[in-house]
Image 1: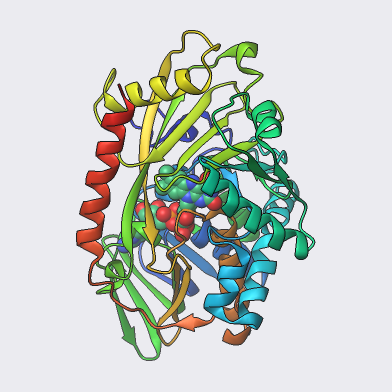
Image 2: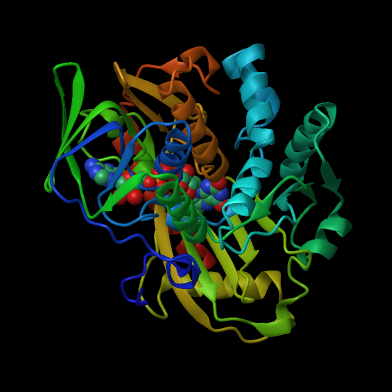
Length: 423
Ligand SMILES: Cc1cc2nc3c(=O)[nH]c(=O)nc-3n(C[C@H](O)[C@H](O)[C@H](O)COP(=O)(O)OP(=O)(O)OC[C@H]3O[C@@H](n4cnc5c(N)ncnc54)[C@H](O)[C@@H]3O)c2cc1C
């Protein structure tokens, strides 16, 4: 992958090779999967292992969506605190989801190990850093609940957070020992390789254009032929197009951008010295990590603005200087962004769109573990399981009328934030 074609830093640095197979005429299969990200690939891997014949259709390349562009924080649980998940889903379903996603980093790392996925995986935890004293109170509330549930998390004082992060800009933090970091494109390609090894087929550069029923089967029409399948899973998430009318109006799209420095050598070793990944409690969230080659990768909500020496790069350089005044000169290497599907209540969904047609969607910026777990759950359901055993209650899609307006408002607010932060 040349740098000019790359969709992210991870696209260039991932050690796993890309899948290049095109589609070759009409196909019959048990399960057609649209989208080659964590959700689609995990569905394919697990469904194939359970004896289903599977075919993944990916419009661009494996990991082209959020999966190849994200920060790589393998977090436990959802964006919402566990008590809020229970309040929204009810005690039984909420507790089950919290448990499943609390254990999910273990499961992701077990797949990495079992399939020898080369994705720079670390198991050093993540720090949810308090950007303010009220952010710290929120973390204390989360910590109390996670402790009650027996989860290995530490509430860090200001001094403890500062020692780990290498900056005294934060009011404290919540260190989650279950979590870790990966090169997300490496993980996506590794899942694809594992699915292919298990017997799944993956075709890239194939856009699913239309879905229709024919004699009790699903027909997925593409520009390279059609796929006839007993069931279909859409793993298109924030990159959903018009394939299923109205689906892309069930969430609000926001962008998140990241900027990577050139490798900094050992002078940056004091930053997140344990190898932790970080995000903060700010309403306009900010993220920070190092990669396996000593680059700092810093991000926030919004799109990349400007090219070389443009606004986003200035924002990043300025933010890094403020956080780590002793670091010295840095060179910015690259910047990219991706889309996130936000739901009104910040909970993901599993929609049953029609008989034998499902989509897990709306991960609210937390998709490595949910994508993996929901994909596995789809495989279990479609190989004879029960909807009641899914990690989330199945629901019907509901249009979010304000989504296009909200997207535009967020875009303006995030752009203003970058402009203010760049100077
Ligand atoms: C910048 C950013 C940072 C993030 N950081 C984190 C993080 O640190 N930790 C974390 O857990 N999550 C994070 N997330 C969220 C996470 O990346 C996503 O939730 C996750 O990747 C979603 O995976 P997916 O497989 O469901 O969808 P995606 O990976 O978005 O894949 C959807 C795929 O569907 C394909 N597609 C769409 N329509 C069609 C069609 N008609 N035919 C064929 N193919 C089609 C697209 O090309 C795309 O490849 C982040 C997201 C972004 C954008």
